[in-house]
Length: 189
Image 1 (cartoon, rainbow, N blue to C red):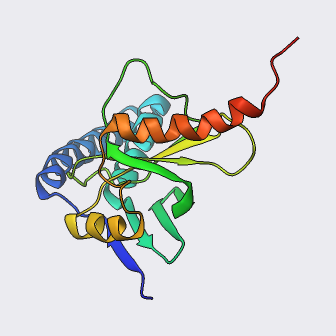
Image 2 (cartoon, rainbow, N blue to C red):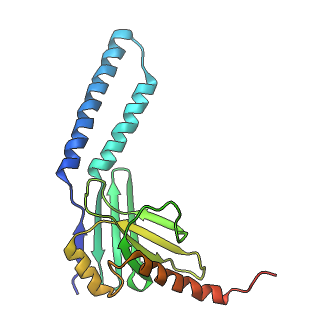
Image 3 (cartoon, helix red, strand yellow):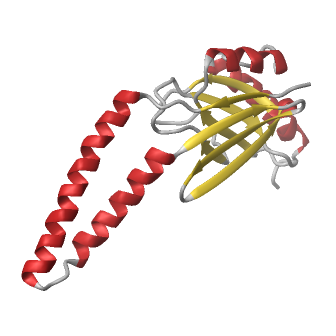
């Protein structure tokens, strides 16, 4: 069976806003060069600040994500010039995919949270909650992702009833998974 592949998209207005910052950084670099030539002194803090901002901008501009639906797992890839991360999640380990909501207090303590989307992509963020392999009850992770409608439809065919569900339902599946391990544990003496 052929796999379905989804790539990140670049939202042009975000790129235009970043180009304004880019022009400002060029002006700042020119001003620093002029200072070095005229004063015969090197402003190390300015150079370090510029280097950090340039690296940050490069990671935003060149950052891309790719999701591949395979036969038994989804493979999520996120890369920029400074990092290449690949996360594979078996379909049987998925508890649910729900719309991401910022919360002051998390209802589940996630062992890991992977941000696997491009910064210039303006589509809504979804949270994929899954069980990490192992026998420990606290081995729950999530992946934050952005994708198109055809991708979600193909994903739903692979994992029916767990994609684009309410957060409460995804957390219910997670608690049910955790409950199996609580029943096995002995109470401390």
